[in-house]
Image 1 (tube, one colour):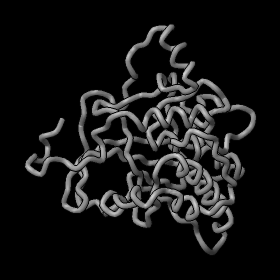
Image 2: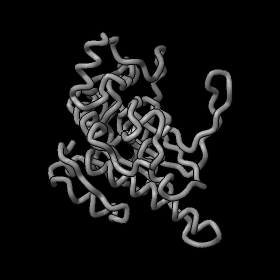
Image 3: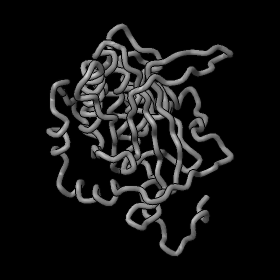
Length: 260
C-alpha cells in the first residue's frame, strides 16, 4: 500500500528543515502544545470498524466528483469523523550513524525524509525527537504478512490507525495515531515512493486513487511516484476543509470515558 493549489516541485535533496520554515509563524504557534509529550493515552474501543466506507454515491455523483479533479469519494472516515489534524507531529526512527547498518539505514532515512518533506509543503508538519510527542510514528521494519482473499501477502509498507484520547499539557483531546511501517531493502526511489504513499494515508488520505500517477494509487505504475500529484493535492485540500473533532481540547468539565 503505498493545500496549496498550485504545483509545487521539490528536490529530493532539499533539507527537511528548509521545508518546515515555509509555514507562517501563526501556524507554528500551536505546535508546542500539540507536540507536547503525551502523559496519558486511552484507546477508544469502538464497535464499528476503525475505517468505514464513505456514503454511497450514485454513478452520476461519482462522475461529478471526478470532474473536481480529486478522489474524495474514495476516502474512508472513522466512526468519529475524518481522521485528520490541523498539524501533525511526526517521529521518524533515527538511522544508525556507524557500523555496517549505517549505509542502508541512511538510504532508508533519506527516502523517508524526502517523502515527508513533500507532504510538509501541503500540510503543517512538525518533526519531533520523542515518539511520545508524535501522532505519526515511522519505523524501519517490514510489515507483517497480511491475509487478502485467503492468501498471505507481503508488502513494503503499511499504515496502522488507532483512535485515542490523549492528555497533553493536562488537556484531553481526541487524536488519530498512526504507525507507519516502511521495510528496508528497496532501491532509494522505491523506498521514497512507498513512504510517500504510506505518509499520505497517515495525514488523512485513508483510501486509494484509481490512477497510477497519484501517490495514493491502489496499483502503482511503472515509475515510482516521488511527489503528490495534482489529484492528491486537491483531495488533501478538500479533506482539510472538513470539520473534525480530532485535535481539539475537550471541555475541562467532561470526565474520561464520557465521549463516544
